[in-house]
Picture 1 (tube, rainbow, N blue to C red):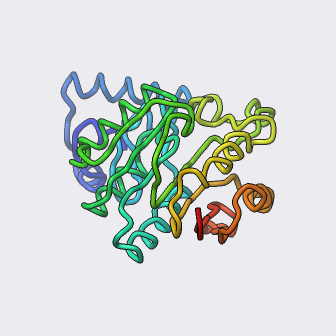
Picture 2 (picture 1 turned 120 degrees about the horizontal axis):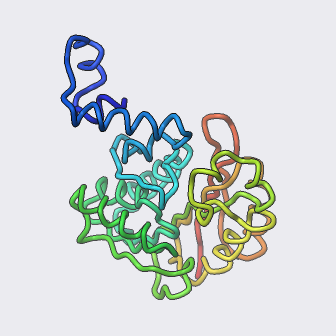
Length: 255
């Protein structure tokens, strides 16, 4: 993968051209990349990109590496948007690299998305990815904590917020490589999710949909909180391929 990335070739080309020689600059870039990887730096950061929902997104150390589990949000959002062609305004909370928002904008040319993140570096990267896919004119980026300065109503809300308990971070390899601000979910891992759940009735239109990614094993706890904070809504836990509760879907009946 490192060689393919440096040479701009496919994996197949690398495997079928063992006789190819690298020039001085290519060798230098390769051994530098290899050194970073061998030191423990995650491969996506070394490459500068990672795939998500069939698209290659720019990635750096300011954002989480996109993961397959998050694609469940995209899949459910696509189903909602296809079933509701008049609903075309969305809010992405904690956008990071912008992979969810940009994917959906690329899928639906009439969709408009407002995306927030507390990190300016993350928003800059999300902007770069939006430009890469030609959807920047329909993406409004705002630096803020959750939805504190957001006004108006949205048809679709989605979020992949930090959900790892603070005490658990010390023993996790991911916490040594990826930004803590995007991982730390507070004492019980649900601090930011609880804040967002309280705000959903203010932001979601009647018959709108909210999608929240969850840590495996927290589905029932989050569901209990959601039911206490949001009246007149239908709740559903969506499982990932391993059978874990991964996304909470909230379909709002009335404001």
